Amino acid sequence: MVLADNVGKKFGHHEVLKGVDLSVAKGDVTCLLGPSGSGKSTLLRCINHLERIDSGRLYVDGDLVGYRQEGRILHELDDRYIARQRTKIGMVFQRFNLFPHMTALENVMEAPRRVLKEPATEARRRATALLEQVGLADKAHHFPAQLSGGQQQRVAIARALAMKPELMLFDEPTSALDPELVGEVLKVMRELAASGMTMVVVTHEMGFAREAADQVVFLDNGVIVEQGTPSEVLGNPQHERTQSFLSRVL
Image 1: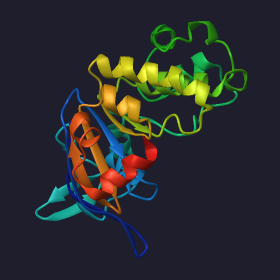
Image 2 (image 1 turned 90 degrees about the vertical axis):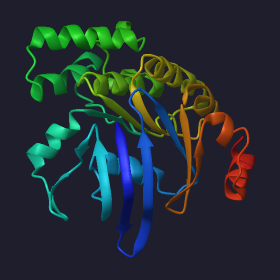
Image 3 (image 1 turned 180 degrees about the vertical axis):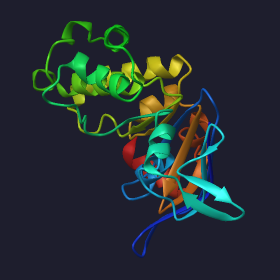
């Protein structure tokens, strides 16, 4: 579902990603771990072309993301085609980014109506079902300001799912939450993983990575230091840098 081939990314003279190779199989959950500044969130944002890569290739479901290739030359796609590619990819951010003037139900309905041109009755039916799926059926008519942080993040997950994505990206989805609200979001993510959704998750939640991930990838300083199953990377890390990181966060 995701293939990163020698992906490089710079911000000015700072090289954030240094030739990253990564493969994510359809239906698998991959957790990206690493210290702040290691390149995890940048890699995630490159997958849906929120950041342009400077070298290498990125594919989602076999399609080159953000570019068309002629010979060995890449040409960036126009915004409309990139937007069409992104409809396959749902993304949940650290901050919930809900429309404050819309109810939870309206937030979930908005993109299907505007982008997919779904009839209002169908968009409402699916939005209602998705809010029930994330445990918020009774909050459908509440505005974001009336919801807790955990509830807002669950609405954000439902909103991403409303576009019927084939891939879900999560950028530290619990980092902005009070500790007692983290569990309710992780529960929804575990259920989503169990349903067979392909997921790439930037997280510091080691319990989630251990339980839900098929693959754990540890990045540091823009390179993949170690990757494997949760039992391999979390239970028996081989690289000294991985061992040092895990000794501090576990």
